[in-house]
Amino acid sequence: MSTLKRVPTDFAVLGGTPAFDHPLPVGQLYFPSWERYEEAMRGIFERGWFTNHGPLAQELERRFAELADVRNAITVTNATLGLVMGAKALGLTGRVVVPSFTFVATAQAMTWAGLEVVFADVDRETHQLTPATLAPVLDDDVSAVLAVNLWGGTCGPDALEELCAERGVTLFFDSAHGTGVSVGGRPLGGRGALEVFSFHATKTLSATEGGCVCTDDDELASRLRNIRSSYGAGAPVAVEVTGNGRFSEAQAAIALLNLDDLPANVANNARLHTAYTEGLAGIDGIRVVAPTGADESTYPYLVAEVDETTFGMSRDALVGLLAAENVIARRYFRPGVHRLPPYRDDPRNVALHLPTTEHLARTLVQLPIGALVDLGSVERICTLVGAAHRLSGHLVAREAA
Ligand code: T4K
Image 1: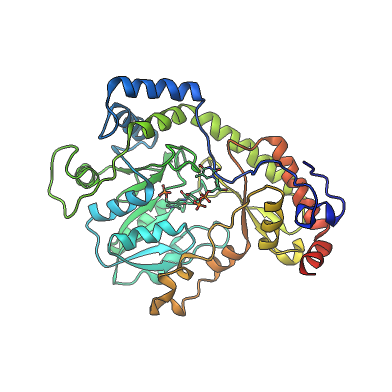
Image 2 (image 1 turned 180 degrees about the vertical axis):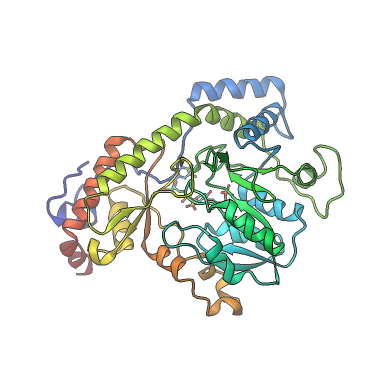
């Protein structure tokens, strides 16, 4: 294990020793201690109640509703299914606008729900959908907008709500990254028709897999519960279609323990984020992009933009170089969902050019932040990136040879 890279051949891509002996991933991966988990699992086995709205799933719904300051929090198997079921509960038809700069699941969920996806670009500085990037695609054929609250920041939901209300269009939110995020003194959860959170292992609050749909609309919540549980939860109301998106007690046990730890985990993220911001500040051509639009972020991602000309190598070359050092950086969200199948083959999208989404897809990198990272690792990663910049001319030439 070596972080000191004085000459190009010190880098692992050119035969040197990797800086880390274990892969460092970008995911949050916060988990309770084995002892606490074992105790929670013992309770589940003693009760003999493993899924179907058990006591732990109900407690999680209560506590998440409190955190999100919303009347209804409905746990689901994952956020993707939450988005599909949310769209079904809203009775949406026709065309829905989605920002192209998002995880593919945002758009795919709408396709599963039988909706036609229309892609919008995002803001160059914040990476979020804004009224200015939404307006050009908000024509009379659009029935809904699925906005995304990205990176532990927000898209400025109140301004989008105003625009969609003016146009008579349903607005709902993919808040997969948004657990614990507030804006304007109010947590995410109760805006738009509904909001969907992810409890994936890589997210701020993990249930391994999982998600939660939040809404202040009791009638909508009742439809959602019936859709999620094949009529098996709450007062039966007629719905167009049902499925199984239930949340198991094992998932709920992990999520509840992680909810206890949430403030400490967020504080850890914030410390790591500050260390990266300071550690990368002096390196030309790479810039940390802080989450925007939040009172205070939870920092679930460390996002940096690479300017190839100034940094001396492309974002992709940097990611390859870091991977060899066991720093498993990511290129979210590449290449932009409008450039992925099946959307890119749709005649309406063949000529679609979303300059900001395409620029961000080429230049952004996410670096490891979360449970498996400490301040020492951040310092070493920043040192590595600095050495990559300093030796970029040699490294690019040697790689090409
Ligand atoms: N909307 C948005 C805006 C989203 O970002 C997402 C999901 C969704 C909706 C849908 O939410 P869910 O239906 O998933 O609840 C990951 C996550 O799987 C995905 O949840 C997340 N967004 C997306 C941004 O990232 P991948 O394909 O990049 O994951 P993967 O397997 O490559 O893992 C990332 C890194 O973490 C790797 O280096 C490996 C490491 N890892 C991962 C897992 C799961 C571990 O070390 N241990 C683990 O257990 O999608």
